[in-house]
Length: 284
Image (cartoon, rainbow, N blue to C red; front, side, top):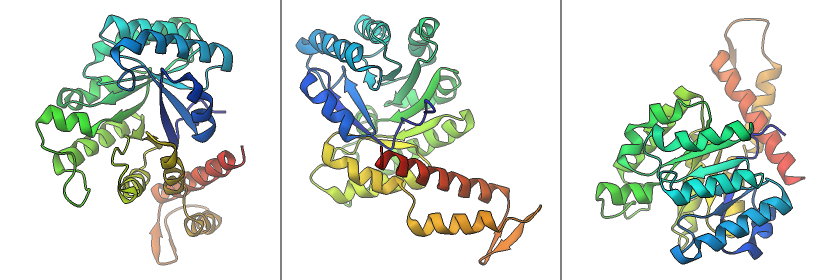
């Protein structure tokens, strides 16, 4: 499997101090995200790290691990322990500068396949996106509108209709543009509003429409909603197949009322690849 193919679409957080849930999270979602940061109380962090290390050593490296902030001794110790146990994907919280990532990327010397996923959750992080994503070891980027809202002093992350407030939507758009320029995968943030499933469905559909690779979940019930949103519809797949079958030897051409050129063909190929990936996951 291509090492980037397990970055979605549904990535389920699981607290690092709940080892009895690790295997279930991995079986439920496309990828389990074992959390050593916000999902664990301060007095449980040492035990959580030990539990995650034990799980990785026994079950292999099929999990993403969110470490504590890499600028702290605990975060650096988390990273070293996870890599030593065979972990290959680290999720870095609240990333604000290139320097915060450098020490973690240095671990690649002992683990050639180490991947780093950064999370931008502050105004400083948004401003530093080009330098953060310009590092070759950064495989993907996500974001945190709830933390960003607090950092900006917003009274809420959403309006009364459940839509993200415009400063947060603007930050998301900057992340999308910076990631496209750096050829970096984008993963959508969690949807915390469990009381209203419609918000999750809309968030997931928007993320898929915007070309994100997947979305983080905080509850198993969110997984199927995310998978449905990211799988192209049968109508989309069929039209893409017809389109690619109709490509002439060269040049732009008219197809079912639309003028088609190479960028549209690339989009059609990507749609079919997403559908094939979803089918493979469903039958795995």
